Length: 261
Image 1: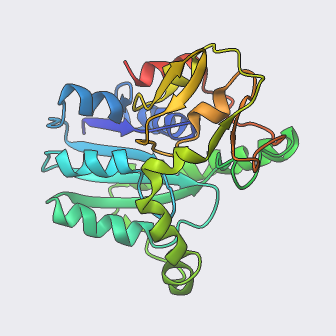
Image 2: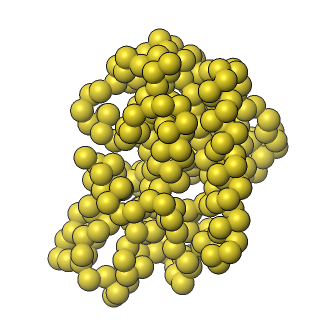
């Protein structure tokens, strides 16, 4: 069975997962969703389609939602989502989205990796991080086996209280405000105007003005600019100051730049 895997990533977790699954399923190099939207390559001819994405506020990133709405295929689609903890009702919500778009969601699977949301917490020490990523590798193998076997399965186990009351209610309000959440970013005097943040932003939401970055209010909240800044000069207000930065150890800056083409 021919397979094409699309991905969206900010700090490398989804790209790492997409690569592992591509190797197992005999797919080619994973395709960045950013590039597919830009180039209008939205009608794949493969017999099986995969989407690998992070979870933001119990939902898919806005860019991934746009992609799903424009995707044209009759092939079964697998959705592999990842995050730092509880996905809430994300899969049930995604299943409804796919149905509205006329897509066959054959598998909807979740796995836990290291969170990159530095506004809430930083990366742990190396030994703890290694343990988490080791468990994630085991889970990726399980997910790959499910997809390879063709079993139809959409993860639907979630706490209705968490999904609809707390933090679900806050997440629904926050999700609508994601594009303008970049108004909370602050740049310290450690910034040297290198432009890494602007080059790595998957949606070109950053400009360099007077050798300092400025955001344009079209953010995805992927945290790429904060996590990849070589001088750790970008913060979410004062919440992330001094917190350890994170990107997946098997993903490099050049990989994130390649996501943009």
